[in-house]
Length: 502
Picture 1: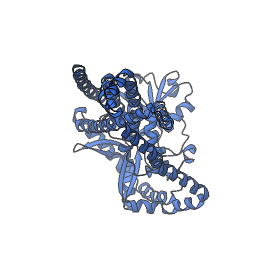
Picture 2: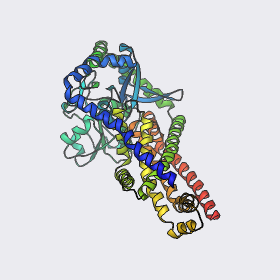
Picture 3: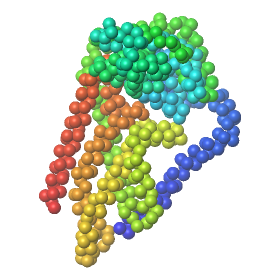
Picture 4: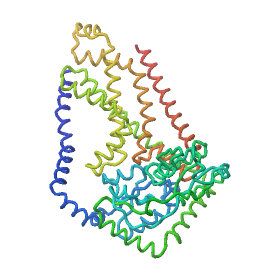
């Protein structure tokens, strides 16, 4: 126990030191921006393009479930991003002489990713609006179109205009122009939003929605690839500009370079004459050969990442849980207070918020922080808080007489804890630890929100590529069931062994 106290003291001494660089960097960044905001803005304005060239990569954020703008197909078993906006940013990267890197994430996370430096530009069917202009700078427009309703073909005769949806449920992707149009121009309709457009189409097909409002080109693409769907012009007033690339405020040199590419594209009409027809060919060819089972490599890859996240997070979660459980049981008020704050804060906030904070918040300071590592850190920290309480309750469940008896036999505090208290506590808390492990396996799906290619993320890729919604979800559900059922059998086996040993 003496050595463990030394270990705890070392941790409590080094913990603030480890935190200093982050806070110090943040403070330095804040003070420097306030004292020389004009100079820093001028620097960003002048050398943003040069920094991209020095880095050698252009990181573009998009929500690749929006055909024909951007969507995914498979090529030689691997994910390939296609669509006319993908072709546009490929041309842009080629023009400035750098490699294109695409980050696929939820649409409503793109602006946060841009503001925190995780991506250099947004290319995701983003309309120019006055609200968005406050946060980002837009390039010249390169495409514009009306908003269309996507409905079930069986409702074709009943739903013929925007007024037909009075009292009915209309869906739109969160953060899009269409979600604003529903609330503003369709006040008598019941508007509901989701993060993924593919999820909205699934809801439409299962009659959770009466219609989905989306861009004309996208609605036509879904209708062309599903004989049960129908698209028609909403004829709602257009309250925004056309589609453009979005850049961080002040990155004018990078934006000006993009405008040169867009000017050339518009002059040659590449989008309408070449890139949209190419995207349509991808959709048609893959419609013929697209079966969900042909995407087994997607599920296998997602399963691999899910297991990596779970195994690593379980290890560090148990380690953190043990440390903070003993800190909370400590008579040292400082150690006890730190443990209480950690446990209560982590248990009192949603894991999804923690994941996004680690990736976008801490990641804004540590620019090189990968999404996978950010997800593992967040899940490990969250798990550690719950494991700490499980271990604490297990230790406190052992009668004091056990410790007293061991000490009376001449055992030291360390020996008593190691050979008497912990074995009995572990047996008592084994079912609770097993439940936490199973919960952690399932909760790993939340890291898909920051673009980690785990099982749920891969499922969404299959949905958008195959235009099928329910079957990929069913396959994923069965994979999770097999994993959790197998894990529960293993845990029960060891639980029986411990009971037999006792």
